[in-house]
Length: 371
Image (cartoon, rainbow, N blue to C red):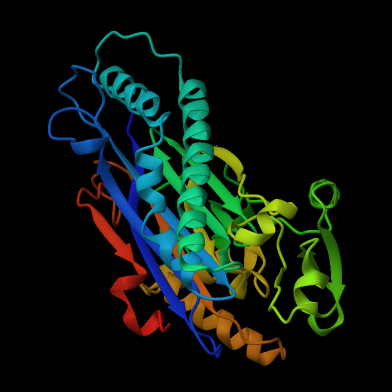
């Protein structure tokens, strides 16, 4: 009997300006993108298989200085993944896995090759996305607009996660489970646990500081920002002396930040490849939420919302805004996306076997994207 596929069964997103003068967060989700076989469109492979497979893409971007970088990237990053040179290898591997699942005798090396192809896709997509953004910033004379990034592409039983800066992704599992998860939403708020799989990129981390300083930049602790570390360009004092508005950033990797790129600001993502087996879902969010919510906090809030049939992303955002106010923390944009997993064709679990595609992006929520 063919093994059941673990698939995306639901995705919700929510965003709040959170008391800030403008909204600089953006989000994007696109599910069940056809990538192989007949009628697959631009992302199809040269394979002659009549079978088809799909991928899903999710992302959140938290802009700094102005909304330009996050706004530009959020509507283009998915396409850069689908058009990356290594994506053809992903499609070919997915088609082989589909043929094996349908009982066709093929030589499949398992998930390792797919994982390495996905890792290459993320690296290539981030490089081309940043190059496009930097070209746009040069065209507009925008020197410092930048954005964090956390993205996830789901394909063939794996999720490839890339990130820049400090917008995290939390994996959600049933407490005490090793594998076999999926499709068990509604089991109660205490049943799920969260773990962060992304790496926060801060300027004072040893490897980050070494890159910055070897490039002629520096790391400064600013008292008006609670002595948090910032990356500063080597031309900062000269630009200030001539009346320019030289900027500093609180993270060491980002899309954009044109005039800090020569001084060690990097767009090379941290990449993690994670099997879907054992996952109930994942949470992508901006630091407006992760500043006040641990992975377990976020998982508990999501589980509680699921058990009540509520919008888990909206609950998490509302909680984040309220929590920041309650503890006297500075206002910040708060954005969350919650993705659920289940078995395709499971026949019995709520939300299992979702077959329709979904496009969810910031532009669909104009009230949440005030410029």
